[in-house]
Image (tube, rainbow, N blue to C red; front, side, top):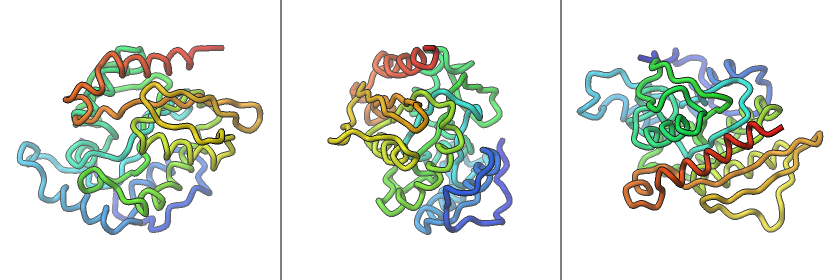
Length: 251
């Protein structure tokens, strides 16, 4: 079971500047208290708990990214689930969306196992890092525009640290797509006009400084709303993540 970090020092003003490595950034993200509504909600959920997890110690903090320090693929989601990552301390871990995501990553060769149950379950990702645009669990899975913008510097900072190795960004849902485009623009990507629209399977290659390119892929979010209704199937998810895996291996 992951142990929540010491509550001090707190970060009340996220910044994209001054981070030398992912370990330091992850620690700072975990100690962020910048959004009062999100802080209150994540802590209330961790205190009240779901009955089926009543015996567990919830993380109850912002959730950093997960994966290697030099990824070729980034998977960008919306936000932690209240009783998933907000409980386990690892993004997409312990909820139905994560069940779908990591099973698919395993099928396409990007994860060593198909399950993600808790933070110490042995899961390893191959050249892939998973993170969210908003780092705290929001009420009703809906962060506000202000919360999205307040959290954006964490995404900028993480992207800045890993961008040199990244070849593909997979955006889960329209929220992840817009957050990814905006963050890539802030690190120097040339965004086409009109701005590329989100859609499942959408793809755009963006030029970056120093002759680098990054491929942005759109994928429906593996939320229960999408998977229960059939809007997103395993084959559809495998197709997008498989394209990301293939692009990672191209010379």
